[in-house]
Length: 249
Image 1 (tube, helix red, strand yellow):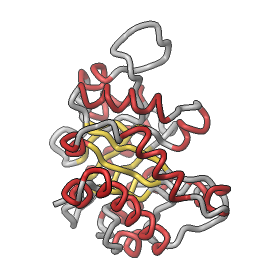
Image 2 (tube, one colour):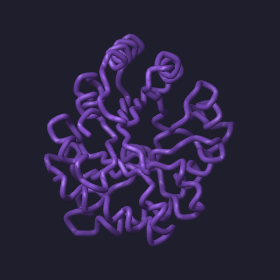
Image 3 (cartoon, helix red, strand yellow):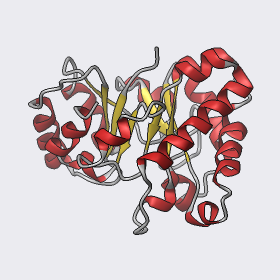
Image 4 (cartoon, helix red, strand yellow):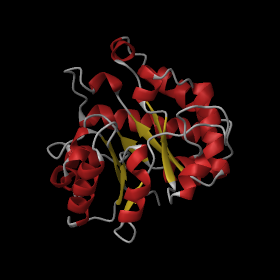
């Protein structure tokens, strides 16, 4: 039985005071679903967030990590460092990491291996840009991103992997992805997993939607059979909006 998950990616937002305020507001919200709830603060606030959320039912997760255990990688964070502050889950492969920091499938495969070696759960992101969608190349792009970074793993590894589909073309472009388009891609993702690993892995791996999910469209998106939740950006910075999405199941 795959899990329903709503994860809020705060990106490069919220200083210490803003983080403390948002966490307090989140802890005051009422959850009416069985969905797992996660938030990803900035690295400077991650340790304090993990501590503040203990026992709340909300998990503090990391936005990124390096593949090396230690060394001369100025500004980077290792998997063991995340574990040392109580973090159990890390987001890898976000479209902004791919675009602005030139992360490749090969680099991400090494990050995936490092996370799994340290018993971290992974939210693995992927998705096509507008040019890919307009040329009807979206399925080939998504299949390539998944296979290049993940298909060296054995089936058992997927117990610790959550997939997150980001239609990059529908984020901040004025274009809109419909719930039907989300469902079509999620079904294709599940089919891709089934071809490689069989139906058990495909049917038990959660696939989240990461394309401008908001309180107004979350219920319709989450009602689709292959959509298991959302990786939320801007709406995660407001406690009321975020929990409206959490409770949309």
